[in-house]
Image 1 (cartoon, rainbow, N blue to C red):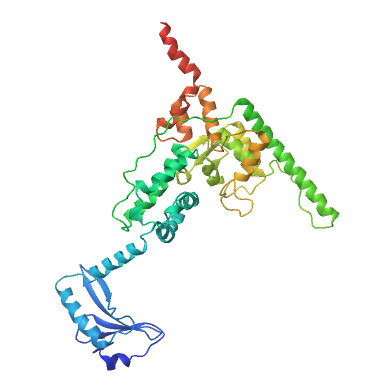
Image 2 (image 1 turned 120 degrees about the vertical axis):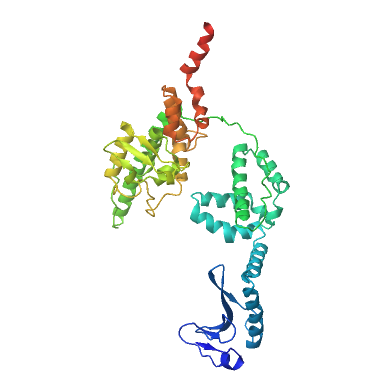
Length: 413
């Protein structure tokens, strides 16, 4: 539909159930959009560098007259004829407005970074916890003002509170990554923390692993925990019977829940906790006694293949026989989805075993340490752990007593 757009013709346009356009008969591309709700908006359709574009004429929003729109349209059509992109200034204005709106750390995280993190990174929940707990005091500060001087008091306090330098560095990396995204998304020009150097750390670090006695206590605690689970279930069943209520089934399966098979698998494969959470039955080949750690769920992003020894194999067979045997190997017993954490169960197990200062991740250290002390060459240990370089694996080198003793023995000659 084409008409000369003036007050009379535009006022006569009636809304329909679909939005439609009416183009002016004199000014190229100039038109009015009529929405189903009766709203009328003036715009210009044009092409720039071969691409079709549309530019809305926002003159006194909601009160644009036909004569005002017509006069402005003539000006813009002239600029278009000269090859200018009339959207450029408008887009620059939008970018400036967005930058001003997102200039504080708290608003930027809430409106931009958090939605991106929750859809793109596996550690989004932990990342947000660090940002809110550790750096919440920076929420009202402008992004460009989050300099090294702004975070030094936090670093000083964290050290006084006994936080390890490596932990401080990891948390600072989270904050730096937020500012890097702000740069990437053109909210700020430079990362104000780019020049902040990490604290010096002991790259070797102390490797915490289970002693022979501790491992025995841990295994006994797993068995005791299962016996306690069964006793509690039987007691509950009797309580229901006494009150003539619907009863539940006793715990007759080999394992009362996921914790025992998960711990045994970690001790025998060195898998990380997140890798165990992501493990699916389709990743396990019981026929060839091998499982696959998919790169998408691994810390390094690299797929690796782990052989199953007898204990790991029999554990998985028993666990499969009492589960559906498809989907995730260790799903949440509440939601059926991927586990988020096992902190409560793990803390209870450690207390039962009377083992202090020991994380679930240290089961991985135990696996590696036992291999090295058994004489397995470090490069094989590296491949089993999925380390991308030998540097991390070398933390276990001091456990190879025979290798070091033989080296020093060379001096006897």
